Length: 195
Length: 222
Image (cartoon, each protein chain N blue to C red):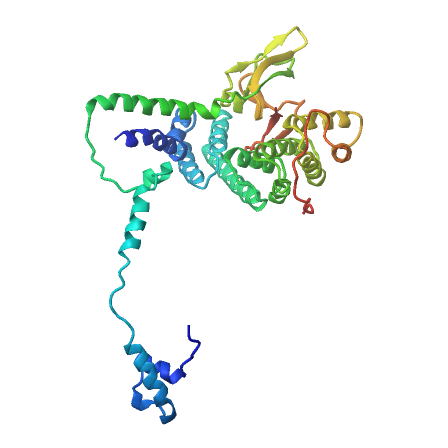
């Protein structure tokens, strides 16, 4: 292949930006030669039918391959409502609902048994309210053991962090004196249990 | 149609987690209508920000169960939302992909007296979200026991970096309590336990506990 490099003005001539007359006299011969070479170029369309056929055959023979390709391949979709399909589809949907709702709790949270104790000799009733029983002041009563005024309750709680308080005689909310406590946001203290 | 039916559960779950319907159902009959309306509004917005709604519901139920006036209950619920936001930001600053459990644990730690900076420091230990959740709960408990933030974060960070099981973290409050019963301050107890944990970490994990995972270098405690 020739390494001949045309003068920039000649290149402009070939690009059609200028005419032969615009070239300086010393470049006109070079311009003439360039135009002659350009005119000699075969401008008939390139036929690569053999190559095209080969490529198309290769594509046609190529295996479909991945599932992704199958999914992404454009295709015509026709929806037909088939009532007999509705029942199994609904059943699958229901099963999925049940599965997805139970899946996060499928791994059983470890349970810890805890004994709560409050010494309240003057109390007539003591109960336990906290995050584990929706702060229900009546859900978890303590049992008075003996005449010493020791009230106890044994609960099995899920591992995690719980806040609670004793409810004495249904009205007085008392933090556990044997446990750390935090501000409850209402001017009182909640006891903290981390399991 | 089948595809639509199969996606139905996901849609329902999404509604359940973000919608206010679940909040209203949990509050029904437990709090006043005005408190329920506010918690539903705050909870829906919080859920959209990726925050847990359970702490809001619990605080509203707790306030009503304690006979607190509605205005004070709503103020407490708003405070919980603010603390959840603070915890979430602090965790993200620490490079943790937050889930609702770890954010709730961070909120508890803030309630117990720790700051957003403390939470970020724990998040930067590189512990898993599960271990970090336990670490934040224990840090909050230690704070409630009177352990100052500096010693608290130092101790929990060392434990988290050691890669020991979460059950080991859960023993810390009892250990601090035992040391305090011997006559030392909570700060001294925590510092002593931190030195012991650091020494054990240098010696390697105890038999059967495997190799601790690699962790990033410890950032300076703010």
